[in-house]
Every structure is written in C-alpha cells, then in structure tokens.
Length: 219
Ligand SMILES: Cc1cc2nc3c(=O)[nH]c(=O)nc-3n(C[C@H](O)[C@H](O)[C@H](O)COP(=O)(O)OP(=O)(O)OC[C@H]3O[C@@H](n4cnc5c(N)ncnc54)[C@H](O)[C@@H]3O)c2cc1C
Figure 1 (tube, helix red, strand yellow):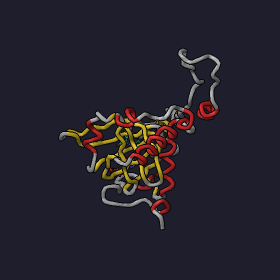
Figure 2 (cartoon, rainbow, N blue to C red; figure 1 turned 90 degrees about the vertical axis):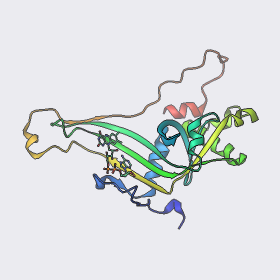
Figure 3 (tube, rainbow, N blue to C red; figure 1 turned 135 degrees about the vertical axis):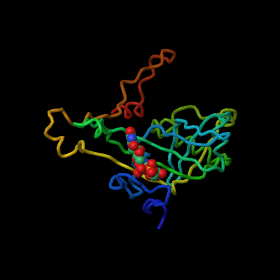
C-alpha cells in the first residue's frame, strides 16, 4: 500500500485528547485540509526559542514544501530538526447560549516531522512551482522563471506527511441541557474565504487582459 492511501498515523503525539470524535483518520482528509489552505504555520525551535512563522506551501504527494529567504534563520534552524506545521480553516463562529460553550467550526491539520533543507536543484525548482501554483494554479507557467540568483536567494524546506492529525468541528453549539430554555440567540456565523475582483497593477500595460488562471481563482 502506498503511503498516500494509508490511514493517518496515530502516534502518542498525534492522539487527540479532547473531542476525539472530531479526529479524521482518512489521509484524504489531510490532503483536503492542506489543498484548500493558503498558508501554513511552521513551528520550530531556533536558538533555543520557539518561533511560529506563517509561510506559503505546496504539496507533492506525501511531501509538503515551504519556501523562504535563504537568509531566514528559522528555515536553517529547521534543517534536520523536528518541527511542527499547522494549517487551519475557520468555517464559522459558534455562538452558544452560554459563554462557556462558544466555539469555532474548523478544519485543521497538525503535522510533525523532521524537516530537510532541499539541496537538489531539480527538486527545489519543482517545489517552487508547486508552491506558486498552490496559491494561484497555472501561475508558474506564465510568470518569468526564477534566475540562478533568485534561486540562490530562496531556501526550500521539505516536510514528510507521515505523522499528522486532522480535527474538524462542524454544526451547532453544544449547550448544557438546561441552557436551551434561555432566550439567547444561538447559532453559527459562517466564515468563508473569497477572492475579490482582480486589481491591475497601474505599472502594467493597460491592454494586458486578466488571464484565465486569475479569473478562475476568483470564481
Ligand atoms: C480556529 C480554532 C480555534 C480553537 N480555539 C480553541 C480554544 O479557544 N480553546 C481550546 O482549548 N481549543 C481550541 N481549539 C482546539 C485546539 O486546536 C485543540 O484541539 C484543543 O485545544 C486541544 O485538543 P487536545 O487536548 O485533544 O489535544 P492536545 O493534547 O493539545 O494535542 C494532542 C495532539 O492532538 C492533535 N491535535 C490537537 N488539536 C488539533 C487540531 N485542532 N487539529 C489537528 N490536530 C490536533 C495534535 O496532533 C496534537 O499533538 C481551536 C481550534 C481551532 C482550529
């Protein structure tokens, strides 16, 4: 069985302690959370201090790629070290009758792994293509390709998707039975990420039309 079809690992680290019923063991659920996300948060201990950085990412099968400046200290600190990456979607604010039962509807993934600075130039190139196309599918093919200098200025980190957990909350508030008689509005305020109308760069020649891959991102 290829790892891409295997259920998610359940290790002491990835075992949910609270609301275990919200856990998803299907690997497709992990891919779903990652593929629908725009940014991740990379947690790493750098010079003895934990730091959590938001970064873009891309996925190739069971490998997550992150990129940053070659001068980014956290990236180099992460090389060959155990790190944690999270991706979070907020799907709704859950307004309960009691303050205690307020919650959030979400889909989130927590990934543990040993990160690796990618050295192979072909893998680095493919990783940058994946990251670019993850944000705007189809963008890599039309934008100017990186120069050697730009490649040298970019660090690429790979993280294996072998140890990960996915947690999903959906639905209405879970109030205490006695609170359902209280006359307080309760329900869910849905949240969704939407793209607005494309704003052309005034420095661009006016006759360049909005390309299909940008229009597709909006729809
Ligand atoms: C947008 C958002 C807001 C939240 N707000 C709160 C809040 O205000 N207070 C609060 O207590 N909790 C909140 N949570 C839930 C929180 O992320 C944890 O799930 C929870 O605090 C503790 O879970 P636990 O005791 O089972 O896990 P822990 O014992 O803390 O962790 C055990 C393992 O469970 C897995 N895990 C835990 N949480 C998640 C997760 N969210 N996604 C994927 N894997 C996970 C990890 O692998 C972790 O190593 C929020 C979650 C999201 C996404």
